[in-house]
Amino acid sequence: MSGLIGRKIGMTSIFDENGKNIPCTVIEAGPCVITQVRTNEVDGYSALQLGFDDKTEKHSVKAEEGHFKKAGTVAKKKVVEFKFFEEEHKLGEILTVDLFNEGEFVDVQGVSKGKGFQGVVKRHGFGGVGQSTHGQHNRLRAPGSVGASSYPSRVFKGMRMAGRMGGENVTVQNLKVLKVVADKNLLVVKGCVPGHKNSYVIIQK
Image (cartoon, rainbow, N blue to C red; front, side, top):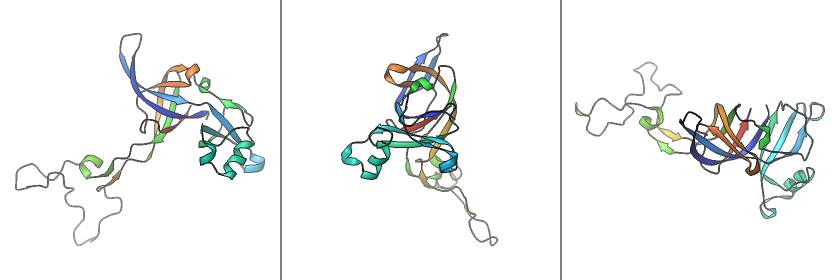
């Protein structure tokens, strides 16, 4: 699957030819440098390793500098491997947003916004314990009973409870590419993309 590494810029909306307002996300996609070419003979599988977003020399170690020097580039902050690329590419080649075309569909992967420790109402959509009457006092957002009786005398694994929410890898599939702004390396896709502003995302087609 061909793809690029990008950065989420933010959300906006545009009007289509029928005057309908469409919410969309702007992504800075690339340019990405091919920092390593995996082959079946050497690595046991074929893939392309792409690097995105330059790292300063101060924040890079010697091992990184040596690895990226082979591709004729500086150290990168984000490195991702893509398997099953549609075309053959060489080490050091630069891939841009021209990889995508308007009207096609892409999958976008990112880390969702972290929301901290949340209760069952926000995290799992529970309705709370009973209604506001019947002596509930301050238990409106409580989880209620979580265990069974004397058998099995334990709480089953996987029970939906309060806990840390967000901060997970999320993939949104089949987002339509509305615009490709090649001179600014921008990709405009329909709908929302996981992650906060300026977070890294992986775009695959």
